[in-house]
Length: 211
Ligand code: ADP
Ligand code: MG
Ligand code: MG
Image 1 (cartoon, rainbow, N blue to C red):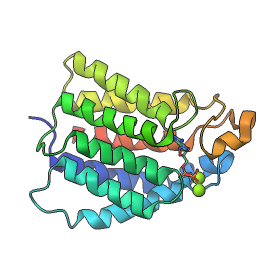
Image 2 (tube, protein in one colour):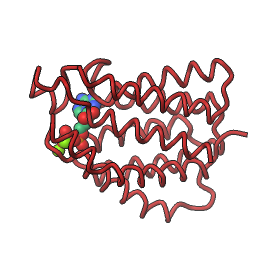
Image 3 (tube, rainbow, N blue to C red):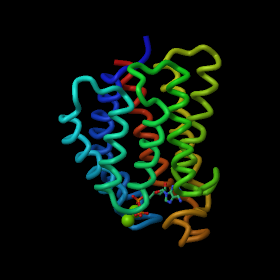
């Protein structure tokens, strides 16, 4: 059992669609506390990923999909989010390199490595009002679900729900990293755009597994 390359590809294709649908929402969130480009950055990056996915060889495994996402995002998305998501997918790819299917432990390793990559790259701590505030609860919830013996789909659903909660919980926070930190106290009262896009992507991962 476990989730294979079909799931990885379905996740990224569905994620690209979801980010396209939520482009304006992410732009508006970033307009409130940043420079208003997050929806555009994510949509442009994932549309570029979609084109390159067509060239994946038939023998590709999930890690190959994530590596392709990483290199594409790093080369096509400017701003903070490109390198941060790029590092997340690159570290995630390394954590599952060579595996043809991912069991619960591998999914936890994937999500943990992705979060650690974001932290390594951006140096944000929990509570700094960044995408880390979606990813860390997601990792913790995935690990707890796996420890309870949940299957792969349930693990991803737990991660997605926790990321959504984490994104909502950024609203009262004062930003201490990224562009929003320039606003100081005025950043409070707005949801962090990167935490929201992270929650959308993790929900897409769970939905792709449930199909
Ligand atoms: P930019 O701020 O360069 O315009 P985006 O708008 O695409 O880039 O992305 C902004 C998002 O990036 C923020 O909402 C936040 O979640 C995330 N971010 C910014 N800086 C950091 C950081 N140092 N660590 C983690 N995430 C960060
Ligand atoms: Mg921005
Ligand atoms: Mg920008």
